[in-house]
Length: 129
Image (tube, rainbow, N blue to C red; front, top):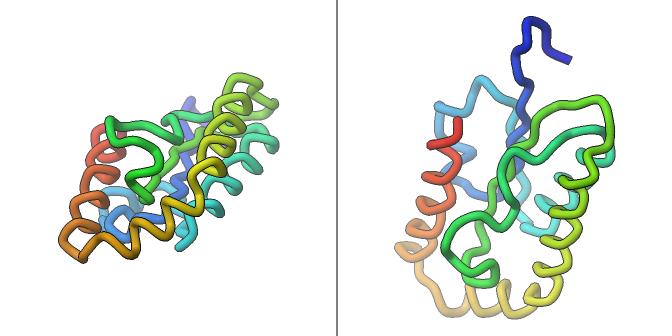
């Protein structure tokens, strides 16, 4: 754990833009190409004592419309039940729309649209960090 009240953050993302931006280099960033793995890793870290700093389904874009998600967690030393409840609910919501999200997004979007969604997700995190 960090000393001097310094917050230790972990960023978990499937957003290539978040991965490539230097603004986030002072924090540990875990990149997964699969959204399910992003959500699952965040849940696993919460079980290890981390606390959610950002909501897994943040933003005004419906969770099944934007497949890019970045989650920020803060290191802790005990299970945060509220974080776990939010994460489990988010995983449940994702599972409801998983097939539609992956199929529809890849079939119905071009690179410019994907970059727009990446930017939406990135802007939410950039403001926090």
